[in-house]
Image 1 (cartoon, rainbow, N blue to C red):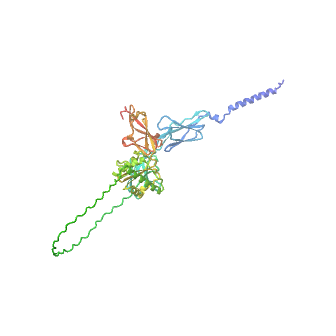
Image 2: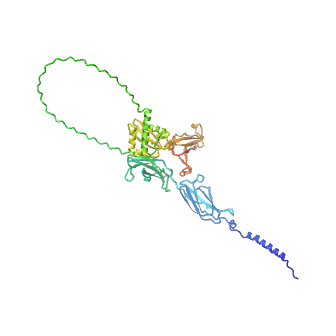
Image 3: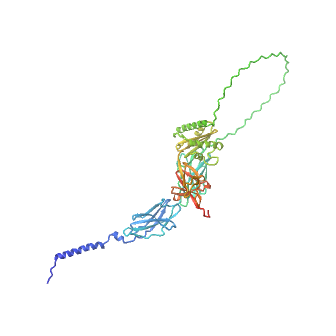
Length: 517
């Protein structure tokens, strides 16, 4: 007996089977991403780490199954790693630039490592626990340079100490060129160089020169920044030779023979006439003497100053430079300098300091050039300056905006500056202490003329309970300073802060209970 097949029932059974297959197959077939999600990325192999003065670049090989990489660093020898960045898997290199958050210090060693990550499986690779280490080159910090003319064929260059410098390179150029010429390479123990004129590196009388010094680290072959403008010096004119007087020999007169006198007749006496009275002349009244003005009176000195300013501006305009404006603070400094050159005719002050300090003390900043001369009138003084190549260069300097003049007993001083009223602020922090001399405040500010120096010995010393004051540390944005900080020179050794921008310093302390202090 045969069974009749229900076709409709068979159709539905077949349809059910097809639907089951369609549901099962996707579960059995995985996408590449899903397959990768089950795999742990391989440990990235670091190929190299290179460094510049303020950055480090780490490179590694591609890690299988990685969707991103995470880069870590630490100072060599430290235990804790610091996360720098996470980047996608297409990149196999990362450059770490020094920043306040992730600093790199010159001369220090840093270690880098990399981990791979798979976002589908949320799985991390292992990592090279030793990593690869690199040394950041130490870059010398910028130095402050000074220069003075010793005579018409010699100058002396001095500079401040540079952090990380093993050597100092001394350069100079004449005013008519922009190219620097290196004239010396001295050790880090030397902070002074005397440039004597020679055939290779000449110094000519009456000319203007510029000098600059930059630090060099021979270990890392790195150069420090430098003052691109340089420090100006005017070489004095060669003194005229004084001729030696040749004595004139007077011819000796030939004596005439002595003639014997002939006897003369004795005259007979005549009657002496009586004298007639001579009338006395009428005396004219003596004129009243006009009082001579005191050449050293304030009014007379002011007239002389105004005359020098007027004559100087005439010279400047004649040579294509803008007229300068008289400044009271510059006048005050020039008055001090005029009395100083009366006793010591030099651009150095009697105490050996630079002439600029007189103007900074008077409240003027951005000092450029000083001219000095002797002359009995303002016209004579300006004439001497105009007819000296070096002094003329100072008179017509296009950077100058203001002038100051001083005179004392025919000794003249002329000073030029660029915006002398400009000032910057030095903020002094007690760093957890207070300043009793300032009413117990934690910080105070000092307004300082631009480009002036503040001696550390003149700054009030703070107090902090249980601690001893040991010095000052300067905050600085310059990346060449480690972490933006640098310790200032010892107060006893003439330490100072050069104010060319707003500066900040903080006190350093040691535990007074520490027997080593």
